[in-house]
Length: 272
Image 1: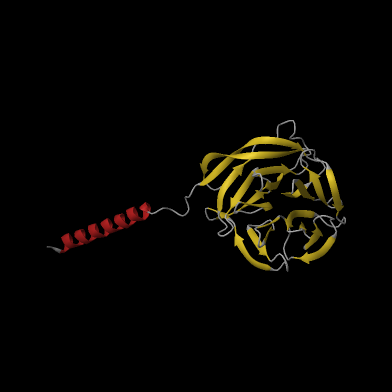
Image 2: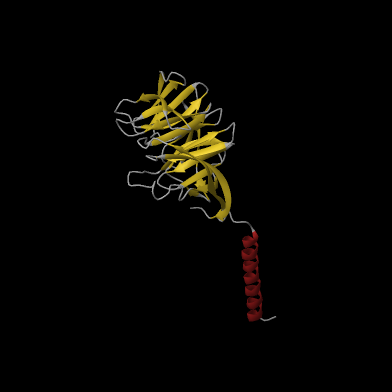
């Protein structure tokens, strides 16, 4: 076998090996190409909602809604009758605070503020202020999983807090196909997942609380009719869940309506 033929054979073997490696590598599932289910919705019921409420947090418990609203000088905590939108009880925050997300943990209501780094703890029944606590980042949304408070700060990070001391005990980074998901706003813990409004979008992310991965998107495009989508209406924000009756509610800032919806499986889509 002459020298040139040996070179030819060696080159052919190298090319064959490269092709084999490339081909086999493409048989492996790609971690970057996983499709994420997208759900649409069916409106089951429509309820009145105070159009002056700049909704930042929403919770359903014992047949009633608890709502936190924002804006300086207009921030409140309220107890609201679902069927009529009637405000049954209200606590006004001092004007220097911009109210944010709310959650109910046992018999306490916890409310965040935006840039003041202060959270408030109220008695659920009397709305009496029981305690203040502090956090280093901005306050956006808050919920809990029965053991930990879960808090968003407008980034892709979700913070897990001890519900008694309010000290951070962990965090996750939220991503969809390895792309960070930012502007995470209002939160609700539903059947083992974290539902999260993504600010300035018409989408809700369904997040695995163990991994931070988005496991589903809810597309609420068009839920407001053109006659309701007026100039003063702001973004979608507000998720509440009736665990006893498996009912999901959504609304938005300055919306005149609150919707009970059922999710409809539409298909899959790449990370948005």
